[in-house]
Length: 462
Ligand code: AMP
Ligand code: ZN
Image 1: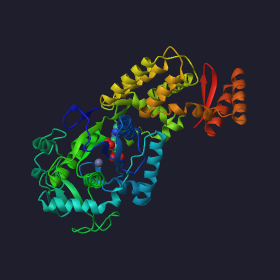
Image 2: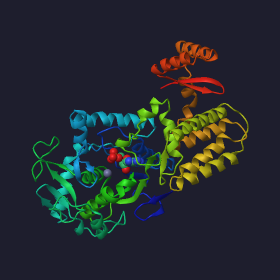
Image 3: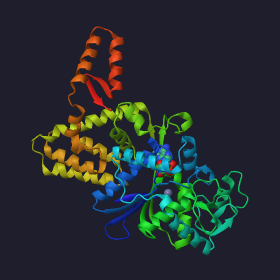
Image 4: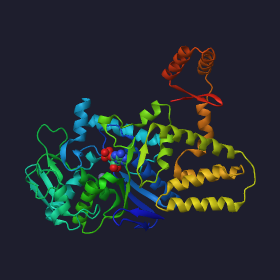
């Protein structure tokens, strides 16, 4: 199995440190708001990695943290803590905010069939481990104290910039006007911040009350659960130049050796070919997808159509067509389920081989999906092909095995709904568009979405 390692900029054969167990760390969500579809794309990528590893027979020890403190508005230590900002804006305590958005996040990933990693630690429950880490770095001379915190001294760590391939001079030139004059280098980063009295989240430390820096959280929790050195670390590409560069600096400085063997990064999702941002109102969520009568798994299908190292442009048109393709894929799979035509063993084996080659070539899921479609459209219908699709779906996670139950659920007879649909059909026949629209709106308010298809009106609950 080959994976593209950001640190070497090439595809490498994957080999675990110990036996059959793959140890993985994924940077988890900062739980101050809903996860947007871009965030979720990164977790679909994380999930595909999990599933491909399992397909290859690995067992997993996978950590995904919950960042519930310390992630400032700018990744490079500027601005307010996102948790406190969220709390202030929503007039709740940061603890309530964290609890609420953690639950929403876990529900969202479940809807997208993203498996919950084995270990999901919260940053606020690992302050001791972080303090130990910071103390170690101070003792070894890699960190220094200022009036507002403890900072990592990047000039003491020779390999700084090796992940993003940025050198110190470039860092220096690129840095914004420095606000913190006590820092020795603009790219030095906070390991621990001293908290003013009014700061809501704070813990005792040898340097007074304070709270951890964001980067130290991942290094400390990764080390606690996966050991000093582990196999894979994942995140979005935005983490390469700051967050992961800083994780490498801290961990290697303390432990004297590289601590991660494979760095994997998922490319960004764009919306209408541009950045997602609150001000543009395009940070869509799973709830937005559902509100349009579209299925979360159709969004997953949309994600699977792009390789994780390519940008993916989200538009509502693309989302609609992903829904249509996903429904067709499920229909096609179902057409094989009870069929009995004879299929040669070689045909199945050859599909399987092609599929495995694709997934093991740096998770080439778009290619694997093409093979899945070839199975669906194969000239003969056979339950053996359905079983093959179910096996492939252990990687895709599209619920192909549950196709019948899902269909039954959606088509559940409901006399009231059927009656309203018939009334609407009549109104349309009578060219009473106003009434037809009113009935559609009434159904919408009941959580029923209509779809006019060549085969007649279909409906589903959302
Ligand atoms: P955060 O909750 O901000 O820490 O981000 C959670 C994850 O989403 C991180 O791995 C980010 O790299 C990733 N991420 C943020 N924005 C996008 C985007 N537009 N497309 C894909 N991944 C993203
Ligand atoms: Zn992280």
